[in-house]
Image (cartoon, rainbow, N blue to C red; front, side):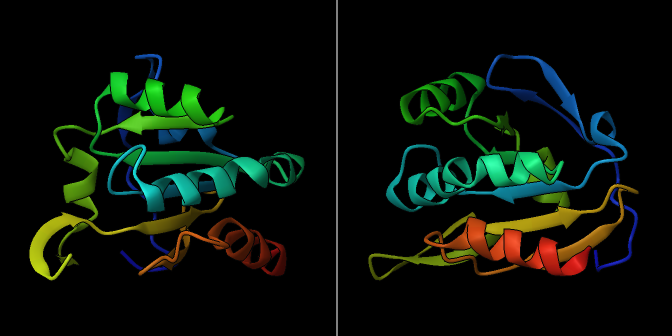
Length: 153
């Protein structure tokens, strides 16, 4: 997938076990950020960054969605623990994660393991891809996304 491509619709369960589809947000820009695992240090920093900047995203009419391979229950616990104001989508079967080819080898404490690559997709109101952030650094990422969105208008 590259910028300009139409993003294929998807449907996943959110933390409240309700279906959420990309087409629910037609006409609005969407930030779709993938993170490896709920309630781990880097994922918490990244998710709380989006929480802290959420008002700015809302004012700009931008939808924020987090996705990981956690269960609905784990997403609910994570959302509640950190008071995250946006939906967290559960992809335990890695349907969307595999569609986006985000299982990659990672170095974990000197050991090579496979895991979800922290990646963010900016999707335009026309549901075309605007930008892909790869190799995301959790701290400051929400601000980086906002800055790109502001420059894109």
